[in-house]
Amino acid sequence: MGANIAIAIVDDDELVRLSVAGLLRSFGIRTTAFESADALLMADANRFDCIVSDLQMPGTSGLELRRILINQANVVPVIIMTAFPERANDARRLDESFPMVEKPIDSGRLMASIEDVLGCKVV
Image (cartoon, rainbow, N blue to C red; front, side):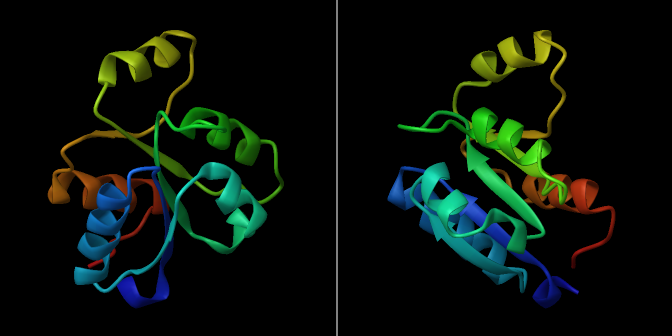
């Protein structure tokens, strides 16, 4: 089933971007990597089944990306990844609920988050 799923990876750190994309491809998932949320939005975020985005980036942040997509008709789920979970928890205190994985990325936790937001078994 993984080959039928397309996931966008958004992170300003090239090493993280390529690592997460490679990890997901190892599970048979199609990925496209973007260096910023703005680049993803220009490329049509709605063509993806799920987005895995860094929390903090220059320009549009991962949470801002998530808010933009929530306001669209076709809501694409966004999983936030961060090395600073306390900053994500600040947003959660404002009644925002979103899936989050901490860096360094644990493959099992990331895959469980993807399966949870998609509502299906991926591999």
